[in-house]
Every structure is written in C-alpha cells, then in structure tokens.
Length: 315
Image 1 (tube, one colour):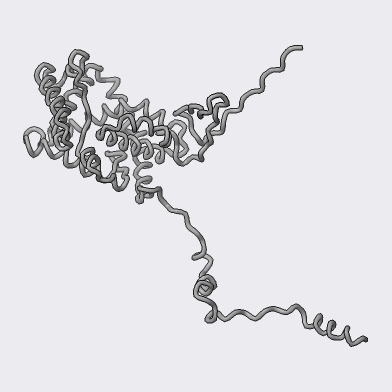
Image 2 (cartoon, one colour; image 1 turned 60 degrees about the vertical axis):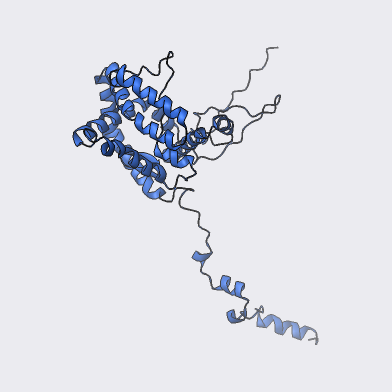
C-alpha cells in the first residue's frame, strides 16, 4: 500500500467531518435571538382584521346574527308592511317623521356655520308643518319651491371639524356605523325629548316611531340590499366598504368638495365591489388609452366572461 493511499483510507473510515456546534453564548445578539427563537415565533402572522375595524370578529358575529334575524323576521315583516299599508299612507308617515327631524338638521347647519342651509331648512320645516298638514305632505320639495330634504347630523358636524370616524361597528338593530356616528346619533336623538318633552320623551311615541320607520326603511332598501349582496363574495366586507365610502363622500360635500369627491370616486374602490375579492386589472382601450368602464354590479372575484370565437367567414 502506498504511503499516499493510507491517509485517504483513514479519512474514509472516520466518516464525514461535521463542524462543532456553535456556542449560543458566543454568537452575536441578532444571531443568538434567531437561534433561540421557536418556529412559532418565526411565523409571520397576517392581521386578523381590516384597517379601522379592530372589532371585526365581533362585528361579523353580529352581522351573521342580523342576517338570520332579517331573513326570518324583519324582512318578511317589512315586506308585509309595504304590501298591507297603502303607498300614500306610508309616504305620509315617512314625511311626518322626517319633518320632525328637521330641527336637528337646522341645528347642525348652524354648528357648521352654514346660515344659508340653516335658513332653507327652517323654511322647509315651516312650509311642511303648516301647508303640509304637519309634515304629512312634503310640499317644500316641489319644483315651485325647491327645498328638498337634506340629511344632517352631529356625526356630520364632528366629521366636518375633522373628527375621525373611529371604530367601525356593526350593531344589532342599528346596522353599520362608526363610533363618531354612534355618539352623534345618540346626541341627536336626545334633543327633542329634552328640549320639547312630551310626546317625544314618552315610550308611547318612541316605540311606534321606531317600528314604523324601521319597517319602512327596510322595505324601501330591499332592492338595493338584494343587489348589493347578490354576487358578493364577502357581504360583510362589501357593506362595510359601501358604508364608509358613502360617509366619506357626505363629509366631503359639507366642505364643498362635491365635484372633487365625484372625480376622486374613480380613484376609490368601486362601492359595490367586494373588497375581499382579488383585484382584476382593467383593460385599456387601444384607441383612447383610457380604461374601460366596469359594471359596478359585477363581482370582481367572479371569473371573466369567456367570449365565444367569431364564426369563420364563409368561403
């Protein structure tokens, strides 16, 4: 056996050489932290809620309960109310309760330093309360007068002065709201009972008002809700997106940014699009270079329609 072959055979008999394990105490601090971390600590966890919705798990639970309650009781009752009560009676009751809310609209326009809008609201309230038989007839919106109803609230006033929406909430018997709107709505509801008193502070008025306005609002919104939820992959996320975008648009209009909000609408997500669905790139027109308009009722998660090949020309 040659002298050069002997060391090679000895190395082969000893097997592969392994480097000694590094002493964790001698490792640099970052390397020691990674070496000592458990696999669970190294796992990157995705956020469990959307931005602005830290109570999403609880909100979704309320949303599912509300959907079951709506399907089994609330919607059938609302549609029964719509079919049983004649349209003129429903419109009269709707106008009556809306007219009783005009003083709240007036006060909030004053708080927003909009005396012109406040004066129009006061004139509308005076006309409907007298010539409109206490508000049963909405004469102020007629083309000859042109004083339509403009919703306003303390939530709008707070947003006008820069108060952020806060937590997004979905509450039973309330629906989608934010912390700002919830507190503002509670303050608005307390104005007439405390400033006027009877009958607004009596349960004999409050319960019928809540039942009638709730059933009427649900019946009138039935078509919109059916359209909104028909193709939504995530109905909860879709409703949240629509509500928050609408509220942002209403606050922008108070600042006189109606045109800017309209232009920015193209930059915002489609209010009827499902935010949980994967985004689909828009196809550009080869002639104009502008993106084609998308169907606002189309679900972005749905597969694109397959176009049938054009028939071959006849020889």
